[in-house]
Length: 251
Length: 345
Image 1 (tube, rainbow over the protein chains, first blue to last red):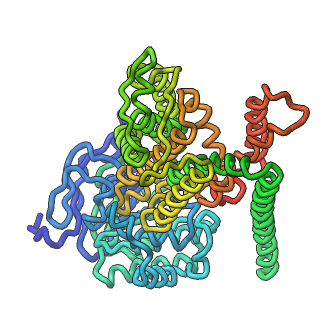
Image 2: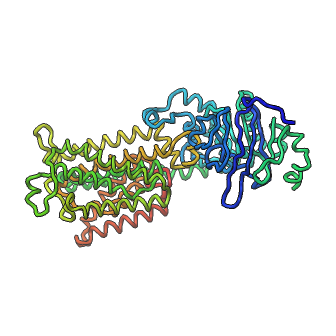
Image 3: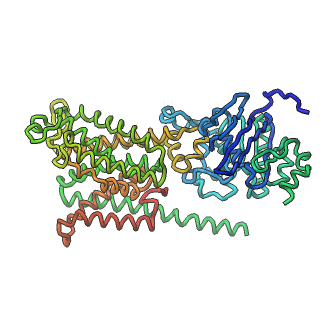
C-alpha cells in the first residue's frame, strides 16, 4: 500500500506533533507531509486544530511533542522569529496588521534589515521602495500606501496582510483563512496571487471553509477532525468520501 | 449611488484632518509665543533659568518617548535612570575635601565634569541592561507596575544607601563643567552646554526613529507577536531602545546634578516620573517635536503658576500638579493623541 516517497519532494512535514491546552488536545499526534511547490489546503470543522497547526508551524505556539521537518531538516523547537530563516511565513485568521503605521511601512518591515545594529544604520533604499511598490500594486493597494493600516476596510486589511507576507522571500506561505469575508473581486485577486506563488515554485498552505475555492485551487488536501488526520489526498476524491462528508460537509 | 457614498466618505475624512491641523498649529503658536513673551517680560536671568530647566526636561521627555511612544512600553521608572546619572555625577565629581568635612563621609573623587559625564551615562546604561532583561518578560499593564517598582527601589536606594549617597542630606559641591581651565560657572554658558546636549539627544533620536530600526519599534508597539513572525527578535530591539533611552536619562541626570550643584533623593521621587510621562503624552506619542513642545509647556506652566497673584507661594507646588492633572484629564477626554501626536497608547 505505502510507496516509498523521496523526502525531498516534501517542503514541510510534521512527525507526530501534539499540542494540548489543558485537557484539550488541539493537535493530536499529527503527521502530515506537504508537497513542494503545490497548493495544499487544510480543512476541517471549527475546533479541529487548523489554526493551532498553523500556529505551531509558525512558531507562535511551542510544540508539546513531535518534530517539524523543513527541507529535510528536523526541528524540535521552532521559534517565531526564526521561521523566516527556515523559509516559512504566515497570515492570521484575525488580521493582525500594524494599525497605527502606514500601509507603506507595513510592507517595509517585511523588506528591511533584521539584524539589530545594521537596522539602526539602514535607511530605506530604492530597492526596498521598488519592491514595496510592486507588492502594493499586485495586491491593488497602491492608492492607499499613505493611509494608516487601521483606517482600511476589512477586505483591504486582508489584502495588505497578504502583501505583507509577499515582502518576505520565503518558500512556504501559510494562509489562515485568506478568503474569509472578501468581496468577489478581492477574492479573485487573492486566488490569482496564490496561483502566481505556485507558478513561482513556492509552497502554499491555506485554510478555508469555502469549498468552491478549495476545489479550484488545491492540489492536495488534508482534512482534520479533533486534532487528528481524517483524510488526505486529491481534492475531489477526498471531499467525496463519506467520512469527510459526515464530519464536516454534512452540517 | 456609489458617487454619493464616496462624497460623504470624503467629507467625513476631511473634517478631522482639518481640525487636527488646526489644533497642532494653535498648540505650537500658543506655547511658543507664551514662552517667548514670558521670557521677554521676566528678563534674561529668568529666560536662562527656564531654558536650562527646559533643556533637562526635554532630554528626559524625548528619551522617554522612544520607549513609551515609539515602542509602546509605558514605563514610569525613567526617573530612576535620571537619578543614577545625577548620583554618579555627584559622587564622581563632588569636591572631596569639602565632603570629608561632614559627619558622614562618603567616597568622593573630585573628577572633572567631562570625566564623570561619560561614566554617569554608561552606568545608567549598565543598570538599564540588567533591569531591561528582567522587564522584557512583561508587557502592557504589568509593565507599568514593574517600572513603578523600579522607580520606588531606585528612590529608596538613593535615600537609604547612606555610605554612598549620604541619604536625605544629599551631596553638595558637584562640579561645574570645565573646558581646558575655563569653568562654565555662568548660567548662560551652562545653558549653551545643556542645549548642545539636547541637540545631540534629539539628533540621535531622530536618526533612530527614521531608520529601519525605528520602523520595527513602531511595529512592536502595534503587535509584538506579529512582527516576530517576520524574523525580528523583539526582545533585543526592546532592550536596545530601553538602554539607549536610559543612557539619555542618565545624561540629563548628570547635567541636572552639575547645574544645581546639590542633589538629594527628593528630586528623584516617583511623581517626577509621572510628570514626565504626562509631558510625553501631552506633547504626543511618537513625535520628537511633541516632546520638546510638551516639555516647554510644562516648564512654562510650572514657572507661570508662580506669578498668579491670588495664589500664596506655599501652594504653588501643589497647584501646578492639580493644573497638570486637570489638563491631562481634559486632554485624554478630547485629544488622546496629545497636542501634536497621531497615536494612542
